[in-house]
Amino acid sequence: MSKTDPIVVGVDGTPASDRALAWALDEATVRGCPVQVVNAWQYEALVDWTETTAQREIAASEQLIEEAVQRVAQGRAELPQIDRRSLRGEAAAVLEGASEGAAMLVVASHTDHRIRQMVLGSTSMHVVRHAHAPIVVIPVTDREPAEASS
Image 1 (tube, one colour):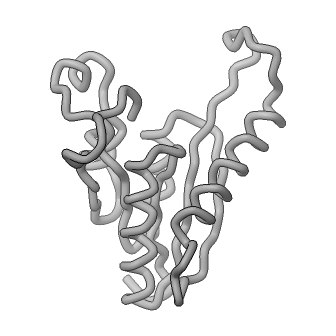
Image 2 (cartoon, rainbow, N blue to C red; image 1 turned 60 degrees about the horizontal axis):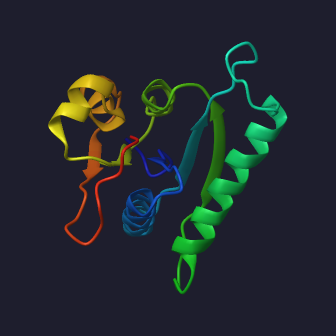
């Protein structure tokens, strides 16, 4: 691990992912390394029945990333270098791949409901088992409701 290895953080526009981004920015500032802000998006033309295109999904993903960075960066005196990445694919796989060569991977836990995690799976649970870098999972707090997606 070197000072140029980035801290990768997954964002999805939720308050929990904003807290993960804030943590990653703080840690990167202390370490003097860059941050890669990653949002995963999916679009399957034959499955997605909405009137959308892959270009719209990319634009929405890029906007989500930019809005998250703006919210979390507001009022900070110092920011590390921030690289924004909108990547196509299922969130767990995208983040697993993005963790290669990273100093660490930061994600938020969106649900503490065990049955939902067993049935639907969990992005944070997947990356804890499969990521190529150390993992930081920011837990759901008692100040915010658990969210259905992860």
